[in-house]
Image 1: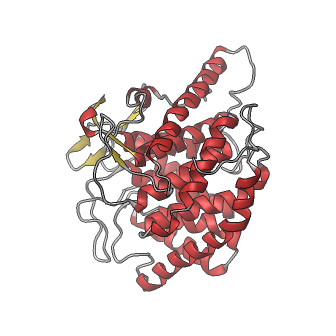
Image 2: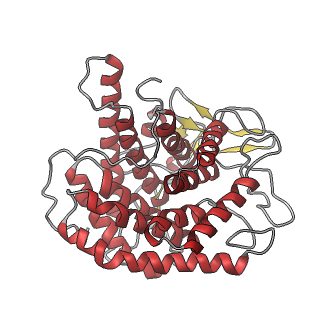
Length: 399
């Protein structure tokens, strides 16, 4: 395997000094469509995923090999991109902790209904960044964004936002004590506040499942629509903390049900189509969105980390292969030369636009898959100590 198995050229193409643009015409950024916090949070998360993946490949070692030096340069480039996405999140977060989602190209905050999904995604991304970004000044900013963002938790009124927030909270409680670079106030907040958050949000998802599920329908809602994988993912992230049999059972049953509904008769992954979604009677085949595949892989990574069950590794492999042609049309969804991903798989071909969401979904799925092909037994690898930087003991609240 080459030291760094993906390219970030298209991601850089879509990023300016403000942040990541949302849409593209083909591969050319469409400035008219502006930016979303959804995508900039995902982009920050993607940077963290691949900077951690670099450790699996040992690309940070000072070796003379030209390929390793090139990989180290890419990691440094991800750190620069992370600065842009962090700066964007600082910009769009209000003093109450809420992240505004839609921003026009010129910088105007567009009128919008508050997005619970966006808030949850930002909490997840900043939690990951607080733990694992290698520079101390980056982590300090992420800690502030995350802690302040959780102040607005009561405004998250929709289940996918709950799922992202639950995953972020569970990650923090599991991992924070292993990272001595975190500020004392941040650690105290995690210990004092986050256990209650985990229990409350897990009970909400459990309640959803128990109200909506029935024989033959092991799901949280009457219809499976978008971003389905976040529900079992969140419960698998929470189960190692809660260790409640009911949480594990629902996580297992719902993920098995989702994987079944996303498997074609010939065995390859078939995302639930957005032209009709999935009901107890039928599942729409078209149009298929790349993000649904990544979310299935994400849920399986959490399940594998919690159980060690090799079946989840196989699903992750099939998710990764969907992007490379193991799909209903037998066509590749990505350009490996620049890391771009088509926006959708449609009945008569691909949607040739390569926007932010689809490209990030591909890059994140590759990062999820990498530890398994790199010969590691788990996707949870605590990175080495961060490089020196700003004093982490300073307050990380109110950013």
